[in-house]
Amino acid sequence: MNTLKHWLVASAFGLTLAAESHEFWVMPDRFTVPVGGQVEFALNVGENFVGTPAGFGRPMALSFSWFNQMDRTDLTDNLPATLEHNAASMAFNRSGTQLIALDTKPQTLEMPADRFNAYLKDEGLDSVLRARADQLRDAEPGRERYRRHVKTLVTVGGKSDATYSKKTGQILEIVPLSNPRIVKSGGVLRFRLHFNGQPLGGALVKLWNQRGHQLTVLRTRSDRRGELALAMPWPGVWMASVVHMVPSEGEAEFDWDSHWGNLTFQVGD
Picture (tube, rainbow, N blue to C red):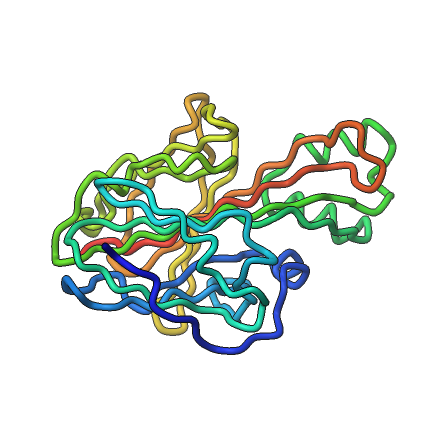
């Protein structure tokens, strides 16, 4: 059985910084590993797909799971008791696609009106902008409760399988409908978005890639079935991200519940 081996690297970063800096992702040190090899999974926070370490432990994790073709393994209890580490190494002794999924516990954040409105515009949350304007609250601070739902895909032993398309049950989830590892330059990569188990239409999705000092960001919106398709300009390491926000009900400390979905993967070999 694959086992969680050890935890590495001290870090002082937490989830409040993650919210301020937008993207929050799991990054393996390699996306392809031989059977029996180890992969170090780092937790990063930052902008433009450039990250710094984020604290990784039970205080911030609602669940931490590993999926393969056979089953799901809950690794939450294997996480450190504090946020003094930001990475984990896992050894895989079975070939195929491996999916690692992390969900964070909810945190709250209050942001000045101008910054909150700019954040809503950047993430394509037009309905929230309109609601704030209609309620004459667009000059008020933005108060939200946010959660992160992040995943990454790794190939073991040179073999990939349908694990890439597994639904993990995350509240907000980006699910590939085509295998990223076999997509060629110019080929189309398809995804479906799910929110509370249902297709999520109209959401802005960004795909990020760094090639040397060149940042590429592809943008599109999901259709009414929650699906989207993008032609991949070149192979390499990519990150998909999406934000969905809904009004909070019966809460005095915040007005919105936001969910951030993220998936890191490699296109091609």
